[in-house]
Image (cartoon, rainbow, N blue to C red):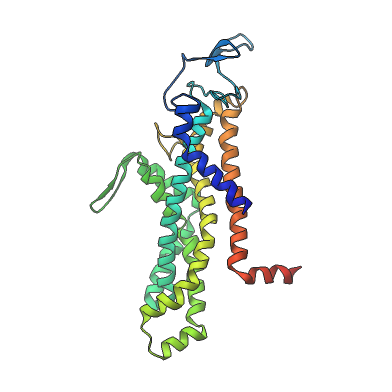
Length: 310
């Protein structure tokens, strides 16, 4: 429960980004503020300061003030890092959540249909999954993003414009489908041969009733356990794509894009890159710990295997 609470705190803080930017930091995290100044300890301080190292060439953003304004400092455009991280969490968490729903929906349907009906349907769906499975996940995500990020995507009457947030959602949601569909298919194959399903078939129960009342209730717990795991994987994938500038596009920002912005400041203002990295690490850790606890709660056999191993 502690891990879930920690993750919910991160979600709540990200959702409160507009309130923080307007009423606490009093800044626009998406507007350049190179010539800006703030009051600090009774003195007027420039947001972008001249370098005091070496020959004194170049400029250095304001470091962490640990105050309401520029709590974690500024980036090379004079934007408030704390506010940008909260806004970035909205996009990172939102994209990961939406991609998780797409992945679980597609993977669950494909796995159930392939495992229950078998035959040619199972063979066709399994071959499609094998093709997706053959590609390294990040290589496939990068390839799709590079192709679609400039052209957009057209599927019949539906069009997703280049730079839309729907593109990383769709790409990330599709690439992990085999990771969900294959375990679901294996579980459905096992259930299909179980005594209670064979008895239902013997009594002439229609296939759709067997799916609804015998198969889906047993599969649903597995899908629920997949939620935090896929959420963490999708968040890491989104951050990687955005770090490579083929995920979330300007003027929007995610944790991955903020890390990329902070690379040039890694030695002078490391907080610009470290803070979003810590946010990603904390979110993924909380999701993984919560996922382990959820699995133990929904699958009593896992506890028996652990006790048996010890």
